[in-house]
Length: 561
View 1 (tube, rainbow, N blue to C red):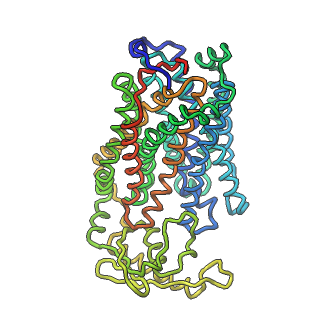
View 2 (cartoon, rainbow, N blue to C red; view 1 turned 180 degrees about the horizontal axis):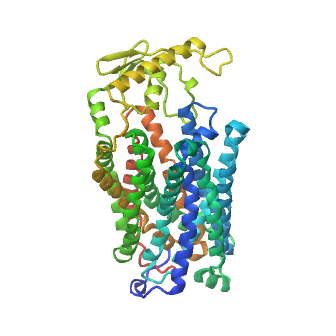
View 3 (cartoon, rainbow, N blue to C red; view 1 turned 90 degrees about the horizontal axis):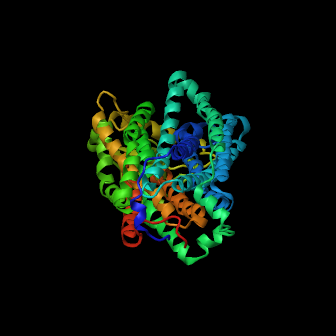
């Protein structure tokens, strides 16, 4: 790590026009790149219908989430590849290339024929495009954060890089805004049929603007100075990860900072949206509008906490955000559920659902590659049906065929056999399962277990308060982290070294959160069980970060190492 200096904390001065240009250009381009990336997540249900139509609805949705997650999984490899280029040839041209890849991939998704037109090739090409997006994003963030930090004056890095930190949230907000606008203008049917492609196609305009802006930018002064002195790294990967003095900082940056930051970020925005739309059964337009409103209110706090970190330090703010998340998620999400759909909460309290079955016949319901026909025991069929309707249930060990109890009504659950081709249920089994599902649906509806949220009965003030609180936690962990990661590594390997822990944390720990949480809910029947994932990781990051991670706000990023 670079050495500390007392001068850094004192040299505060007004922002110059060149610095404003750097921040604006870097941030705007990164907003567009996040817009491209998050369109897919916001439209996952429709993408499941068009590109994974060969699967049953639950499996299609899980596969759509996995394709979304695929973009996150490759982000660390993009960080390594583009980080190496950025440390060898410069920051500017590297993240000019990343935005070209991102924008082109997103535009092609808007043109890509669906499963009905080209069959299995459709999801294969879609996943390939998601992988390209992930690689591009892996190189984007480290370049933008490093570029802005290396232009920032001493004592202002937290405030300056905080603008980059707003871009992921603003990109998500922009994607939601465009989707809502197109959906409202076209109507739900046309939007679901083909209008969903328009937000992807619009990205070509954003790409043109971004490239034009970035072409006008200059290389960072720190890199120019290092290049002029002939001190650029010839092997940034070997220096970053082959030398223990740097590798141990990379590991600490991951487990003591970015892992916790990532799960708080995705829980406060993506999981909150998923929770409202599926578990609380809020209609998509209302859920998107409320998330968008919370983002508008909460986004300025990225700048607030970034600037505050220049005064009190990066570490206390990030650690406080992780701790608050770990301590409060199991309180605020039930509160959000009650505020959004009080009738459903009341129905679930009155009509308890239990599945009585032989545990030996029960499979893992959260498998991301399983299909309906893979679940043939009565226990699996029972849990699959409840999971698909997001009806919470308790498990009771028993013997014989499974039964579902809803209040005082007991429903017998059939088992199933496959047809001779073993690619579908046998006719008798399919008929029995259809009858069971009809009975289950009627019983659940009669007991209010599928009640959609009524806008007239929502406590919208409480919902907004909770959603804004979740976003503020996001700003606490995310606002200061770019400055802290930049300050942890020397200039010659900064792009490479900071990018990897950031993208492993956000790409793997954070990006897998929606899929993992969904699988945990499906596996247990507990609608809040998925929260254990972010709670445990945030708590672990707090403990590791408090013990092992050093404060960096007074570090001289130009110091020799």
